[in-house]
Amino acid sequence: MSDVVNWGVLGYARIAKNSVIPAIERADNARVYGVASRNASELPSGEWQQSYSDYAALLADKAIDAVYIPLPNSLHKEWVIRALEAGKHVLCEKPIGLTADEAREMQQVADKHQRLLMEAFMYQYTDRVKVIKEAIDSGELGEIRHINVSFRFLLDRPNTIKMQPALGGGALYDVGCYPVNFIGMVTGRLPVVCKALCETEQGVDTNLSALLQYDDGLIANIHCGFNAFGRNYAEIIGTKGMLCIDNPFLDDAGTLYLHTAQGVRELPVSESDRYQAEIRHFSDAVLNKPSRLIPLAETVRNMQVLDMIREAL
Image (tube, rainbow, N blue to C red; front, side, top):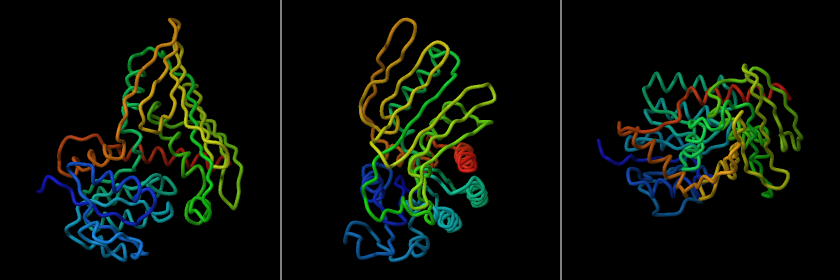
């Protein structure tokens, strides 16, 4: 096998064009082999080995090893399964589907065809997350009793799929899945109680808060939205300390603040290349090299919590 993974991209979405395709090109173990778009005229000429006018044609190309799927949320399940059945490894944009049942079905197909499937939570590949985990593992926070996470931005683009309920739009699916994943990353388990409130527009949630409680009493709350000023923040509060985290889902350099009885200590964070790291790790796994992948069990748990929140509204 080659030391470079040939990637195919299903759809020329903003995140593919601006973030993931450039990241594949920066990774030393990956290359963009082909891109498929139903609007083939929008693809830049000469950029890749192949361009395809439909997704099935890309999946039929035996030269492609792995596929990245940035399609609307409602299309994830269909094209993840079709890609797996075509023998491709799959990196799918978050959320992996619309329900936990969809995630389980995709997991079963991946197992059947012995192909890798991973949900693209790129923020987990940053130095910021590494420092967060080190702070938790150090024991300086004590027993964690509360987690608070917000991720919102002001959506000012007209005619966006984020506002289309039939395509899986809404703030919870778009940005709320990040706080849910973050809390799951810290707790490693499902909540036992969920309460939620939301504001809606055009049939989708645009402002949502949820309260989660765990079997040991720990309480976590998430907030997400795209109808007001942006916020990207988290705090983890324990019996001995509190960790305050600006921009938990970005990869810029910064500082975390660890509050304890001894005072406030700054924890420096280095700049990362989260998309490139995600691609590099996934490509290493395709090449059967040691790699850190986000496990599908975490993905299914994430979707279970999203189901709980939607059912609580």
